[in-house]
Amino acid sequence: MGYASPKGYTLLHRALYLPEEWVKDKAYAELRKKCGVPESLDFRTKPQLGLDMLRAILAEGTLPGRWLACDEAFGRSPDFLDQVADLGLWYYAEVPHDTQVWRDRPLTHIPEWSGKGRKPTREQLVEGEPAPQTVSHIADTLPATDWTRHTIKEGSKGPLVADFAFLRVVAVRDGLPGPEVWLILRRAVSTGELKTYLCNAPPDTPQATLVRISGMRWPIETSFEDGKQLVGLGDCVFR
Picture (tube, rainbow, N blue to C red):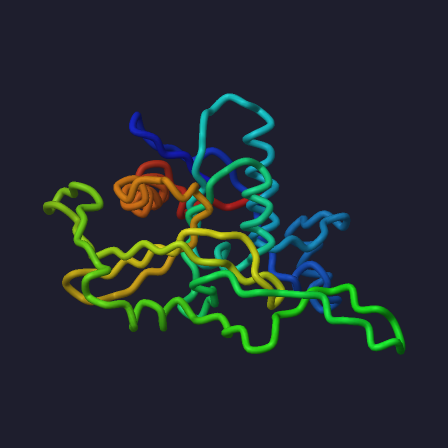
């Protein structure tokens, strides 16, 4: 986990991820012993490890922070995003193109009890309400007037520019409408590559801020590159 601000960037925390079979499969027992993996170690997904690190950093209270930027490995987990929001942070999460959202909040209801069996307690979509759409479909069907060109940052080879679209949408949670969030669509000018993000920042967040935060993962990547080149991070061996 890294930290970036106008004053610089650095790596703050780390956790070792082990695939589930490494932790649970008996076939890996001898290898676990050889590598010194503690017997008490439980399997943790990458989002779970990320939350562990985030909570530890916030508990220290030494660094100010408002945003949490992450890639698809974390953005595809609604539970991770909701827990980040519960910590009082604004997530800016890249999400897969097949992520579904509603353009407008659909109506829901608890069906009337038929008089037989258990009374319904779970909300359902009202019949006739539209299904959610994938973020890629929304991007493909937006009119050209909804896209605007912005400079993300000034790079060593000149400004990095992309076309953006910003929409307020409703996230999907267990097939039902969840929180209202930003859908940010970013399309590369030269290649047309599409990046899709969900963000729980307030509705009045300036577009310029949403553009700037879309580029704040690069300092973290630079931290990894510097670590590999300057201090041998790529050659690190745990013993």
